[in-house]
Image (tube, rainbow, N blue to C red; front, side, top):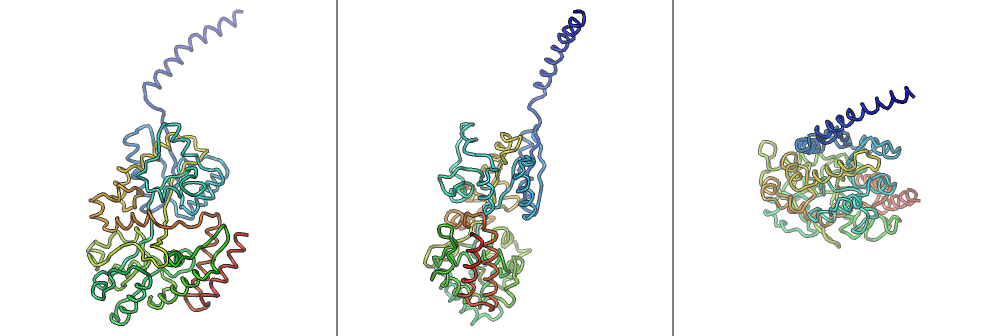
Length: 424
C-alpha cells in the first residue's frame, strides 16, 4: 500500500512537469521539419536550392537537404528507394518519360486527394498540356501524381539575317527548310546549313521526332510499334535528305557542337535547340549573333508543328513522413512568383502561362512566346514503361542510316522488329 502511494505521488508530481513541457513546446512554435529532395544537378539544382532557401526564410521551422544528382543517379536512387518503401525522400524530380512507371507502381502520393483534403484546386495557370504528363492514366481525366516543374520543350532556331537575305523567313513546312538548306549550301560556302545532334540514342532521336511526327508518323499505336508505315518512311527519307546539308561528323554531334556553331554564327538552321542551350544567345560577350537568330516553333508538314516536350515533374513519395509539408512546398515552388524568380535567376523555363507572358522575362528571353506555344501544343513521348529501350533501339538504327550503313527502309524495318521484341 505504501509503495502504491509513493508511485501515485510521483505521478502527480510528473503531471505538472509534463504539462509544462507541452506548454514550452507550444510556446517554441511549430515542430521542426526537414525535407529531403532528390533533384538534379546544374541549373536545376540551383533552382531547387533557390526555392528551398526562400521557403525556409518564410517557414523557419522547415529545413532542406537538396540532393543534386546526375540524371542517371537520380533515376537509380529514387527507383530503389520508392520500390523499397523506405521513405527517404519527401520530394523527387522525375523526367516525364519515367513518370508512368512510378505512377503505375503506386509509389507517389495522390495529389488530387491532397488538394481535396485541403479544400484547394489545381491552378489552371499551369499549362494543361504539361500537367497531364503527371496524370495516370495519361490525359486530362487521369489521377494527378506530380506537378510540372521545368518547362522544357524543343525549339527551332535559324539565322534571320540569312533568312531575310534568301527569302525563307516565313518557312512553314519542312520542305521549305530543305529548300533553304539547298540555297545556303549553294551561296554561303562558309556556313553550315543544318545543325542537329547525330549521336546515337537520345540525341539523334530527339532531333528526328519533330520531323517524324510532322509527317504523320507514330511510334506506338495501341501499344504496338508503328515504324513500318508510309508516313514513317516519308519522314525517314526526308530526314536523311536534310542531313546531307549538315556538317561532316554530325553523327558524333552533341549539344555542345550545335550550341557552338549557333553562337559562333557558322550554322544557319538548328532543327533542335532546348532552352538550356540558348540562354546566352543575346549576350554579346558569348555570342556572335546577337539579334540575328530567331528561336521559334518547328515547321509542320502533314501535321502542324510537333515539338518534343521534355518536362521535369515533381512528385511526393507516398511513404514520405512529411507529406503535408512537402505538398505545401510543392505549391510554393510551382507558384507564379517562385517560377518567375527561378526563371530570372537560373534560366529554368517555367510551366505557367502567366510567367511566360511576363514582359521582363520576354525581354530577357525573346523565345518565351514560341516556348509557350510549344508547351501548349507539343508532343509527349509515348506513355510506356519501355520508352528508354525503344529510344535506344530507334536511335541506334537511325544513326546507322545517317552514316549510310542502312537504308531508310532497312533502318525502320529493324526498328520495328526490335521494338516488337521489347514490348512483347
